View 1 (tube, one colour):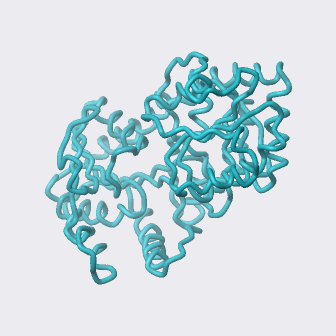
View 2 (cartoon, helix red, strand yellow):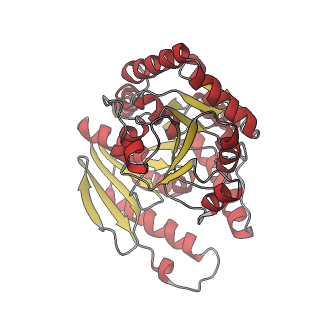
Amino acid sequence: MKICMLVLNKFTHDTRVYKEAHSLARDGHDVTVWALGDGRLPAQERMGGFTVRRRELRLARTAWRVPGMLLAEQIWALTAALVRERADVYHAHDANALLQAYLAARLTGASLVYDAHELWSGGIAHKWTARLRLAAMQRIEGALARRAQGVITVNESVAQELHRLYGVSPVVLMNCQEYVEVEKSDLLRRELHIPPDRRIAIYAGSLTAGRGLENLLAAVPYLERTVVVLMGRDRLNGKLQRLSEELGVSDRVYFHPPVPSEEVTRYVASADVGVMPTLAIKLSYYYGSGNKLFHYIMAGIPAAVSDQPEKRRIVETYDVGVVFDETDPRSIAQAINDLLGDRERYERMCRNARRAAREELNWGVEERKLLDLYRSLEAAG
């Protein structure tokens, strides 16, 4: 089948879209991913056995524009691009791509697949333009999700919420990593000059609002012989570096720049515990499982995570970590201290993480559900 995906970003670091497109191409489908261009990235390129095409929007280059005009251009231009593909299936990645994919499917008689990467209901926005856009996306999702021939999402909690809202029954494709064998190393210790007698708690991901990183830094004074490494792109303009100095813990907090996605697991494996202190500031955060948790498991280290439904379900089901109250720095520190302080328990969780990654929590297992969905669409004709 000819499959046309749409994602409304530049498609430079979207591992979920890449994995799905790669799996479908490897299964013999003709896959094209449409994304947004910026005049610098290639307008067309091949990767992973599929084609990537990017559409640069003219209004995006102008300093002044009427509110809503860029969105109108985006809808018109990308719908037209999708229609020209004459695909058998249009696959929308998230609610902001759903309208364009739906219109293309209706105009060409193709099937529609909706992939909800997160929950748009219960989202938050501060600017009035962003609030209007969010409200529009929620209405579009409500109107069109139930018209799709296939719905996909990231975990059971989000699937249940989508079923409650729209009556759909999504296929759950967790954001697991491709399985790799990873060896324990001193990579972070060597690069950051961390003393050998210190244990390493790592947060691997973008340094951005809502991730609970301020509370993680506030927990550092209560950690026993443990330092914190924050590895990722700084989207807070140095706020966390300044906070670590204000708290007097700058000698125990290390900042590492982001590494290529294929290198993340190797770096994580050189830490002792992975931390995920996400705040429940919106439903998608509360119900999310996140990429980081699967990186920690693939790396063979236990995780200390926020006490939220999917995160708790994964660490308890597979016995690969502990939960804490993400709003309380002392709770965060206590969970990490208890985990690292019990050697027998710690080593058991390391073994369990490696076993879970090898047998269940890897993309090789998850992709089978994606391929089955597409085979059912192909059989339905």
